[in-house]
Amino acid sequence: MERYVSEKITSEELSILDNNSEWLGIDKSLLMECAGYSFTTEIIDRYQLNKNTNVVIFAGTGNNGGDGFVVARHLASQGIPVFVLLLGSPDKIRTRESKSNWDVLLNLEHSIKRKIITDSKNLVKIKDFIKNDLKYRVIIDGLLGTGIQGKIREPISSCITMINALKKENSRFNVVSIDVPSGMDPNSGKINDMAVKADLVITFHRKKAGFKSSNNSIKEVIVKPIGIPIEASIVVGRGDLLPTLKKRQKDNHKGQFGKILVIGGSKNYTGAPAYSSMTAIQFGCDLVITYVPDVISNVLRSYSPDMIVRSNHGDWLNMDSFEEIKWLIDWAECVLIGPGLGTESQTEKLLVNLLRILVENNKKFVLDADALKFIKDHLEIIKGSQCILTPHEGELKIMTGINLPPHDEVENRGKILHDLAKKLDVTLILKGSIDYIASKSKIKINKTGCPEMSIGGTGDVLSGLCACFLGTGNEIFQSACSAAFLNGYIGEHCKSVIGPRFTAMDMIGAINEVILKLKKT
Image (cartoon, rainbow, N blue to C red; front, top):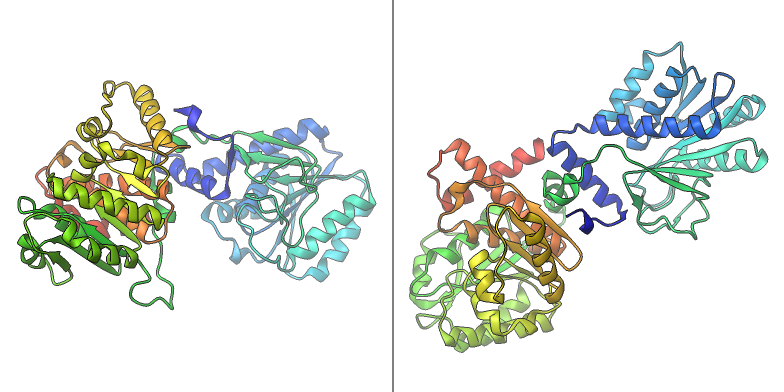
């Protein structure tokens, strides 16, 4: 599975890995410790630092500064004189890990010199002091990390100017940036305002996406591992979920936080579309419309006053409902088709025509259950679309003819699914004891869930969650990962709270409690 991990990484992906590592039991403070230590050993060896070579560290109030605090401690432990300048007030330090490492420095008054800079005017004296003390050879830039946005504020902007000036005026200084040169966008490599011009960047885990040979703020980059395991990249975790739990903006009005259309149901199946729709309602999507044949419409309305049900005559959906559904597709932000749909030929004709409308209008959509059985002869329609397919192993075989190897052959199963996702250029979730999430460029596995979830309705909850994440503005692959993770974790939660005999409705009722729990973990 490691071969599907990219060589470069964005700041958002790194944040996911940090949180996934924590989910796997590796505290973020351990990652910061490893980052600081690996940075320290590199610069000691490279610049032959000793008790006669002073180092100055410019640290910000984010995790980049926290790494700098760890570096200071490790330098001091080797007898190397170090001067730490915190650019900003200590009460503005943003993370638990950084604050903890700053507090440690407060106890090391003998070995580490430190100063707090909140006014850029104080930097003039600092510059003269460093310039005139010939023992200072290394300047460490720990001002800004991967979260840089917009114009750089004081006193950090003046500090960046000062660092660049010191280097330009005196060649004895070696400027080393922690993870990324402060001021450079790590995703694009662009400098929107100003940036530190680094002789060396010691970056962590993998190269950042914006590190290119054309970057004039970087002379050399080396990558240091910090203990992030491969599982953090290939196993879906809390880190994947958190950025997809969008918040309503203060000026939002009804309809701006998810408009979901669920199309399904037949005279034989009333529960399936209700499960998916109730999932979206409980998740907090603004508006959910469920389109079903008239024969079951009143049954669905009885589930909840929150259910908005539209219908057309008959026992199954057919082309008579095409024009109305077409209008609703234009209204919706995400469309889910399939729960309880049935396998009548008249319904297949409707589905094919709806798929063409979805693809032509570049709509996000989810295909589940009976819709997956229909598309076996129409796969060319959905190629390259913004679609999530959610088959279990049997549905996958009907849809594609593929027989998967045994469950213990994780690598082989993953390769087959990745090849299929690449061929179709869509995102797949293969449901099972281990879920596989695959797109044309990525694959992950999800291990949340329990055997007690192998009951009717849990797949409809999953497809509903896919629609929720898509409908609230998330990217396709990340929506699939979050839906699989959350669905499985809700099942685990219900087993621990209710016992082994829970239902899909129990899972739906637990959605908000579980999300709050995961956000607080």
